[in-house]
Length: 141
Image 1 (cartoon, rainbow, N blue to C red):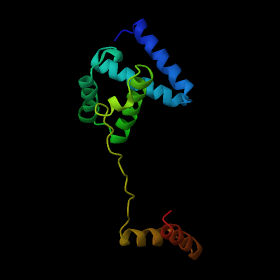
Image 2 (cartoon, rainbow, N blue to C red):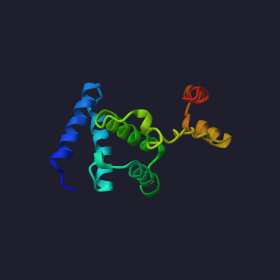
Image 3 (cartoon, rainbow, N blue to C red):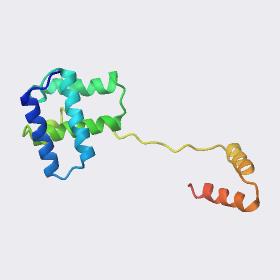
């Protein structure tokens, strides 16, 4: 997709708005990347896209690219920022379009009794080392 001067102007305006609000350079880079990815996917400037195209893009991220919900949440935040800060759309009008997926909860790995016994018996050469490992394990560290 060839960059036009209008797209560059939108990009610069978006970067300026994010800078004014104190976003980090890494966040700005990420947000600009998501808006660029949207434009590339839809083969149109993001300021010309309809709500259906935005939903289609989010569906593409979920079904075709198999991104996690947490990654899609970042994309939604980037697009909300772009459309509210650069396009002047009310955040309330974006809510039905840019749906935020649920946050994924990662569960800790729990060892079986046999695995813990094996860890403590093999990993500990002397009594102090075994006591240390047992304490660390029982504290959940």
